[in-house]
Image 1 (cartoon, helix red, strand yellow):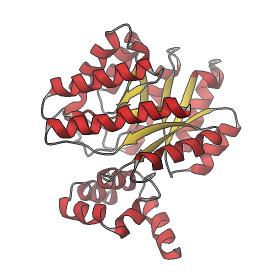
Image 2 (tube, helix red, strand yellow; image 1 turned 135 degrees about the vertical axis):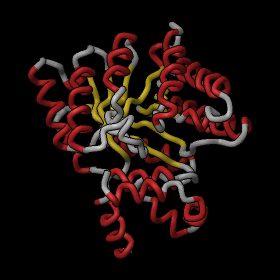
Image 3 (cartoon, rainbow, N blue to C red; image 1 turned 180 degrees about the horizontal axis):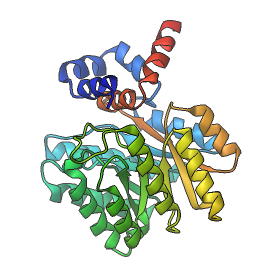
Image 4 (cartoon, helix red, strand yellow; image 1 turned 45 degrees about the vertical axis):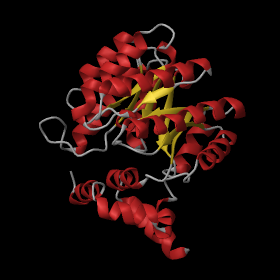
Length: 308
């Protein structure tokens, strides 16, 4: 892990800096490249704009570990509003949910209850909930909750999960998820992990990402491959072409504000592209992890601030 990446991950946990930036006009301006806005309406407006460009959307109400059941239920209410708004506006969008935002650290049963209500609501509106993955200490409990929800016949088509390629365990997890026919979003991973649980070298993470992508593509299940790395995208495209897997059988996923040129290029070439659109006032940890993933974004943001 590079020094700069480690620094941004450390900063993502700095409470004083977070409090200052999330409450300041400067901070909101700083985050605007990667955050759709502070309110639901901001996110819906961005989703509609992306849909008009032929791009699908995942909406994420930002926030992580809550400190009370009331906070967890308030966070869930935002997602219930999103599901209703998506249906009313006929948007091509679904939702992505962190279980710690639903109370996982307080009570796993509470988080599972809330996730169940969201999956039921998604099923009722013909939509889909992606349960996001957090740090490796939560991998097993997150997988267990998703498996139980997916095992309910009426919810199987409405629930999916995220797998992080930098974890050693991920190949086994992917193989088991494929056996259960659970839809996966594959990403590289953006949390600070020890060499005991995760590949420390980028080259090994990349190799594992390609390996897992091929397993997912070959499964016959509709999965999402989340990357901005053109080498990874080229490897996926090559495998799909060699094995007769049409672009309609999977989607590339990217982050709002990152590689917009590549998003448009892939859509023009006939690939499904879904953009992860975060919004909300608790944007700081997410923003710092985006800088950690791709430190070149720091220079991009600095240039935009100076230009303004």
